[in-house]
Figure (cartoon, rainbow, N blue to C red):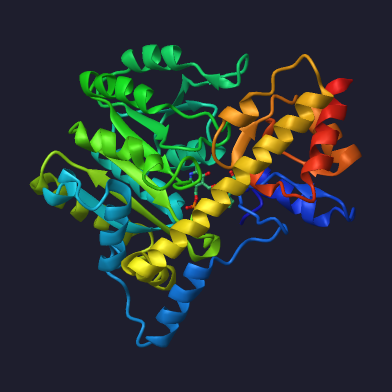
Length: 398
Ligand code: PLP
Ligand code: TYF
C-alpha cells in the first residue's frame, strides 16, 4: 500500500541538530539551529513568561475550543505589539489578525489564502531565504521564485538589484520580505531602504508578505517593527506573520499570528472571514495554553516591561558575542575583512565559509554550522566563543 512512497530525506537543519546531539565529543559547539541559548548554553525560561504561565495556571478552568481565529486578548495584544497601540490602521479597524500555530502556521494559512484568492499569483522570496519558506508556499501550490538579496562579495545587501527585480514583477505578485534579522544571512534593509521599497510595492501593485520571527533581536521591539509600521502607514495592503517562539523562548508552545492589513474595515472583515475558513479546513482552531501565556504577559504592563528588559539582555548578549568573534577572527586572519559579523543583525550570520570549510569545522573541531555557511550567533557564549573563533581561523587559514 505504501511502498511507492519515497523516504523523507529529512530537514537539513533539524537533521544536523540531531547529528550534534549524537556527537559524543564533550566540547562540541552547536551553532546550527535557530534557537537562542543563554551564556550557559541553555534555552532560557524567561522570568516574565514563567510568571505569566503561573498566573494562567492559577486561573485554570474548562478548556473549550478557541474560536477559529484564536483568543481575542491574544489577537489584540499582537496588533498593539506589531503596529504600536496608536497606529491609525488599528484605529480604522483595517487589520485582520488570527492566532496561528507558530508563525509557520501563519505562513501556511497565508499561503493557502493567497492560493485561493490570488490563484494566478506567484511568490518571490529573497536569495537566499529560510528553506521552509519555499516548502510552505510550494506546498500550498504557489510557484516560488527568487529576487536578488545577499551580496557574497561584501556580506551585505544587493539593494539596487533587488529593487530592479521587483520593478519587473507582474502586478499582484507576492513578495516575501524578512521584516528584521534575516534568516539565514543576518542582512537587513535599513529604514531608508524600506522607505525606498514602499513606492515600488505601491506602483507595481505588489502584495508584501512580511515574516517577523525575530522581533526584538535586531535593534529593539519597536525598531524591529519599522517595516510593518511603515508599510501600514503608507496605506499598503500586506500580510505579516509574527512569532513568539524566539522572543519569549516558547518554541514548543507554537505561538504566532497572521495579520492582514487591508484598505478598509469592510475588506478586513471579508479577509478575517476567509482566514477563519482556511483555519477551519486545516486544524479548526489554535491551541489555548501558549496563547493564554502570551496574552497574559502582554496584557500586564508590569510583565511586559520585565519581558522587554530580558529580551534586551538577550539581544545585547548576541551583540557582545558578535564583537568577540569579530575581534578574535580578525586578529588571527589578517588581511580579510570580517566587518560583516558586526553589521549583520539578529541570531544569524553568513560566515562566507565554503561547505568544505564547514565540514572541517564540524569534523575536526566539533563546531556545527550549516553547510550554507550560516552560523547561529545565539549559540555562542563566553565558554565557547574563543574556541569557535580559533576553529574558524584555522579552517580559513589553509
Ligand atoms: N520564519 C523564519 C524566518 C524563521 O526563521 C522561523 C523559525 O526559525 C519561522 C518563520 C518559524 O517560527 P515558528 O513557527 O516557531 O514561529
Ligand atoms: O534554524 C532554523 O532556521 C529553523 C529552526 O519547527 C526551526 O529551521 C526548527 C523547527 C521548527 C521551526 C524552526
